[in-house]
Figure 1 (spheres, rainbow, N blue to C red):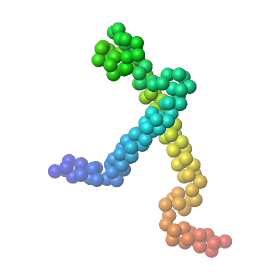
Figure 2 (tube, rainbow, N blue to C red; figure 1 turned 60 degrees about the horizontal axis):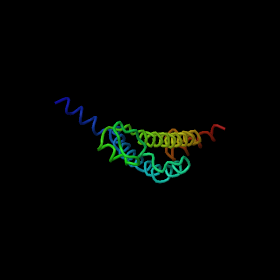
Figure 3 (tube, rainbow, N blue to C red; figure 1 turned 90 degrees about the vertical axis):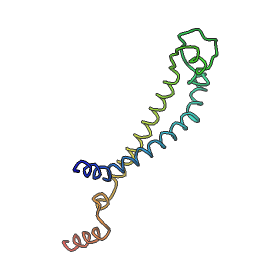
Length: 137
């Protein structure tokens, strides 16, 4: 079957494996960023604003007693949980900033890399090129 062999070729190509590794590392990286935000950043922001926990900020469409936790308010009726959105938005902004800084650093490293490293030449090839250039002089 031609389609089976094509699928096998696609599945074992390096790009698919690279993508799988990227997804796994990305998932772990996302958990790490979530922990940094939930455990380090959000308490500072909450302390500055005065609200101790964004996740319990909501608007209830049905009467709920004051100070009811979000999970309990959801049991009473529908709620507009904008606090969770604020938390997710802050997570996204910080994650996007970290990824931006990583890409910027990688691009700078690529730009600063010597020509033989950037082109993927082996050390032997680089030495031979250097000898050739010296002989031309």
